[in-house]
Image 1 (spheres, rainbow, N blue to C red):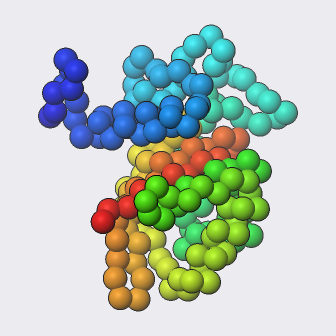
Image 2: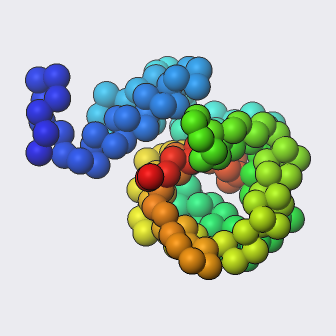
Length: 175
């Protein structure tokens, strides 16, 4: 256990707190939860039955819903199936890749799909093994191992799902 600002936290809690701060820095207005994993909004404006144009809002996403979307997303990614990936991301999706020093941000379904097309052309044997998925409502932390012909690297994606579609993916890599 690690002592942090007067309270004790395990490693997973520290990762989730850090991930929440990363999303907050992106300008997301969602309030932190006072209990649980800290990612599910609890203010009066965040009712579990809120809907917009028939879409589920973040508060409606269960851990299992988010996990299923993340699993389908990674299956399509490993198949290099860009049309399937396009069907799993929102129109306003934001993907931040691992390019040094701070990653390149791609915004919008077309821009994100184009980035993946380029990646698959440059890395035709790319394969991501999901080592662990931790979900908290509409958020997920995905720990992965990326292999190519003569090497590998490990990393983490911070992802968000809304209405059954991936809306954000921020990738970090070791090394």
